Image 1: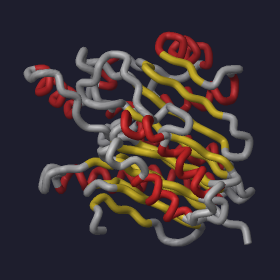
Image 2: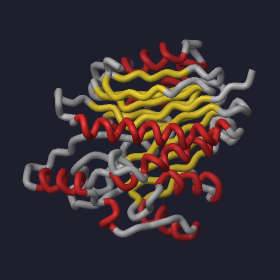
Image 3: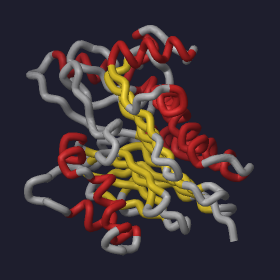
Length: 303
């Protein structure tokens, strides 16, 4: 029987009780459902997993309640520098971008790199020029400076520089043809140094997909995830150790735990449509839908 499925996340983070307001949590639940639906419709109509994950992440990038695209965190200089990656599990083709300014949908820029560039990874001005060549939508700095991110930046600007927060968005999907894909996008961390790159655009770090194992998108402390090659570890544990997907995610989260302490979360999907969502934080914005089954949407660990 043919099966399709999609899993999305809006970031994992450890928060103090009450730090996430009921109003903001409600907005994020709606946003999770919208992103999930954007990808699910494509799969339901027989579309590709690659198109589905791009659509889901584009939806997040349009939503100021998530740290990607319009809702991106700001650097110490008050700018938005955007990172994204997308990967096709069938062909292992991929596109990644980092340090991108002004591009409304970094994930679609990463997709353009996959489809139209001989390279895998473009950064900074080169990535922006490529976006302009491809006719992708751009906007001025004000578009990316929402009231929320501007207030966060002003608060940090009055303190000693100390980057905080590390939300990311991502999606993994399985289509009716049996192909997997992954997409991840982020605005980085609040008050990060100019030019800092996290795990999201790093293939094998925060993003990886292969049809012979699984598709994985990570969230949490980017430096920790990169150093642990977390996404690839999950795939390797499935492919070479033969672990079930959920066990592979749990083992990967715990690998080198003494040296790699920090917030970590993963969503993953295998070719049989099995879903895994594992994290070591008290907040993980997440949603999934398998075939025609009812969607699942949650934010807090106890849900």
